[in-house]
Amino acid sequence: MTIVTRFAPSPTGRLHVGNIRTALHNWMLARKAGGRFLLRIDDTDAERSREEYVEAIRADLSWLGLIPDGEERQSARLALYDAAFERLKAECRVYPCYETAQELDLKRKIQLGRGLPPIYDRAALSLSDGERAAKEAEGIFPHWRFKLDHDEAITWDDGIRGAQKFDPAQLSDPVVRRADGSWLYMLPSAVDDVDMGVTDVLRGEDHVSNTAVQIQMFTALGVQHPKFAHEALLVGSEGKLSKRLGSLGCDAFRERGIEPSAIVALLARLGTSLPVEPIADRKMLVESFDLASFGRAPARFDDEELARVNTAIVHGLPFEAVASRLPEGMDEAAWLAIRPNVEVLADVADWWSIVTGPLKAPAMEAEDKVFLLQAASQLADSGDDWRALTSALKDSTGRKGKALFLPLRQALTGRDHGPDMASLLPLIGVEESKARLQAAAN
Ligand code: GLU
Image 1 (cartoon, rainbow, N blue to C red):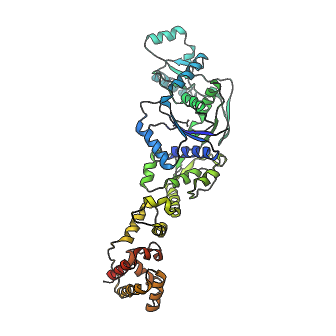
Image 2: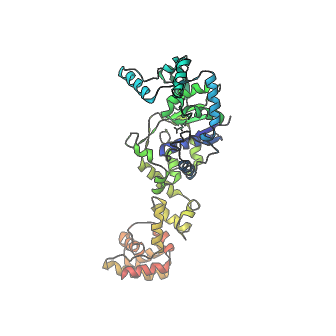
Image 3: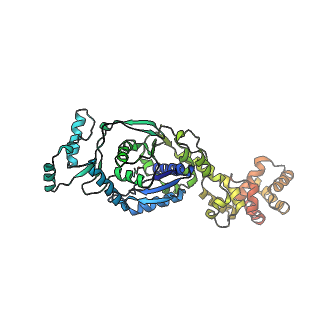
């Protein structure tokens, strides 16, 4: 059977790092099995859903390289939900309720005050036809709840959490449809998972009790439920669910110069028993993906760790992978020379402007100035061969170590540290190098 997974964001905001992780894992699960990864836009909440977020979700997934094999959106599928609803209604698995939000709130407060769990008391189930008609005559339209079957425990074998068991009597019958006819998330999602052929639902553990309810919905609709797996939530490095993570998304990553492959490498393994490594090769990550490696403890997201993974990935990027993002004129030799000295790709521009100049001549010690003039004339013999240059200078001046190398680096680059001079010298070129040595000696 082909594995089908789906990522189902609500377009009520930008994707954050937690959503990105869920999307990635669904993508990996599908890729590993040679299956399909679908995007489903959960936009039944017309008031809070925005087209700009739908577009941003697509753009973010594409930037991350998580390309869906298909896309659906719930607002285009309302007829399906209607049909499922009519069917459940005919079987008395949904029932109309007339309580106002305030009445429900009051009931909950009373229950909590008595130390009872705030479970809906099913009062609406005992309304007579006449009482219902009276409500509607008053202009009060019902919202609808799904009637949980209390007869049997709800169980499933969770791909991450193992055997799960819920007592349905401990859950409220969920509202599936509002009085204005609009849908809450629960039923449409189950209907879509069936219709889209979703075989594996992988989502955050905040959905565990929804799963218990949805399993009964699948049964009520007469279909087998998909496999479920719930991953532990992502927390900040301080160990708490953080507001900051809830707004940390692709824009912020891009701004910091984080490569999509670094985000993917980190999130692929965060919270698993596999080591987080700077693996840019997605095939390798996909190969090692395994729900059995997922832990139950919250996964800690650490910005510093992301920065480290990013730098390691940048250091390994081949020229072809970055060519279009490098400064004009920068070739492979320049990339390879500069690459080990940058943390993010954008840092390349600084080094490239040092290579191409113009360079402001650094202030040098008087004793070094004579040495730099010697170096300038030595270039006529050594050309751009750094080793030939420095060994000739060593012989002729008796300088070695720092006294030999540092003034040359300072005069040629204006910096104390940086890329290997043997690679830089040919990039700067003999004429320009000579001019820089002479300028620094002035
Ligand atoms: N739209 C739901 C959410 O964003 C989808 C949850 C699910 O994966 O079923 O929470």
